[in-house]
Length: 205
Image (cartoon, rainbow, N blue to C red):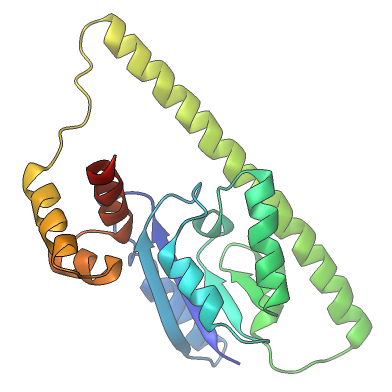
């Protein structure tokens, strides 16, 4: 069994590695070690997450996909979430979330009673689906409140938008122009792969 930890934060100002110590302690409490860590700054509402896709590519049947909570894995619309979940299931991955106790059985190597295991698996799958739906609803509500706040600020003449980091844009463009890949560019520019992709798309627009 390989434990593959996935850590995600929504923005570059947040620390995606913040929960790593908690995940490592959780694995240790179950007498396991985390074999691989996949860390990125990206929106959970986006299906285009390079590190998550890399994890899915690396994964083998029986591996554990360990997350702090389901919303770190997905805030996706229903259709996109179903595609992601189908991929996870087809790879034979077991989702284990720190805040979902029914999922913790996935850390056990022993098969135990087959009927009980299948029953608990079904319950856990249902709860994962429910928490993914709640995460999406929370995302949509926050986006709606944010949009309302922006409209209110615009009406009051106080909204200026987010300033563009011209130096970062120039650095990323130069690195991409030199032939570096997305991850290498992000590493050298000290930013997320999502930012590199955004700057690349803006440059080619």
